[in-house]
Amino acid sequence: MPVSDPANEPVNPGRRRFLTATTSVVGAVGVGFAAVPFIKSWNPSDRAKQAGAPITVDITPLEDGQRLVREWRGQPIWIVRRTEAVLELLPTLDDHLRDPLSKNPDQQPEYVLTDFPELRSIKRDVSVLVGLCTHLGCSPEMKAEIRPEPFDPNWKGGYFCPCHKSKFDMAGRVFDGVPAPTNLLVPPHFYADDNTIVIGLDPSSNQGAV
Ligand code: FES
Image (cartoon, rainbow, N blue to C red; front, side, top):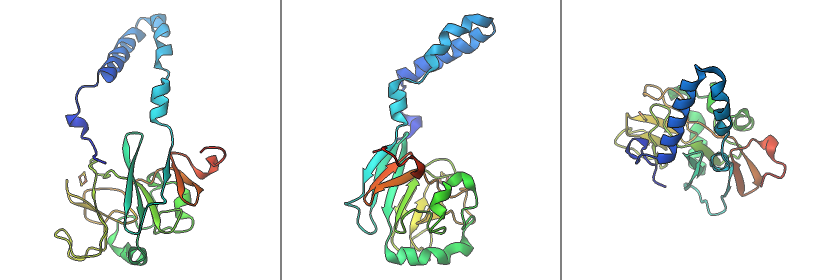
């Protein structure tokens, strides 16, 4: 799925209207109760709520080394089935990573560290990540194969952001010495069944969510 560059997007008239309305209301605050009638219109519309709604993904067709890309809340969501070779290598990379044990709690929900802390996933082989670089938000390239790459002769598979050369492993953990400050984000998610992932809700929501 191509990831759009917000800087190149055409002007969104709906957003412009929202900004204009917001400016008007902020201006009205100074005149006291005149602002009250506007506040009702700040409630999110059904469409806005839908834009933030969870998504359900069938991972049945996902084979070793492959990635599915979906969109949730305007962000690319990567669902990757990692190969056994990659899975065995991941724990050996810790010395080269900035936060190998994912101690920054803002970058993933706690439950993805329970069973496989170095893999940052609920299932051992399936990784779910927000596909945006934590430096300035480019979408990194997936370079899943273990082979020398022009940007790293010892490459063990992972994600490379060509914007400013940040590197992440196949668990989305950031390497040392690159501009990206943190590991890639893991979105809230749970498995509704063996091959169905719900993105956007925690496992505690697994009651009639699908
Ligand atoms: S946006 Fe990825 S390295 Fe700068």
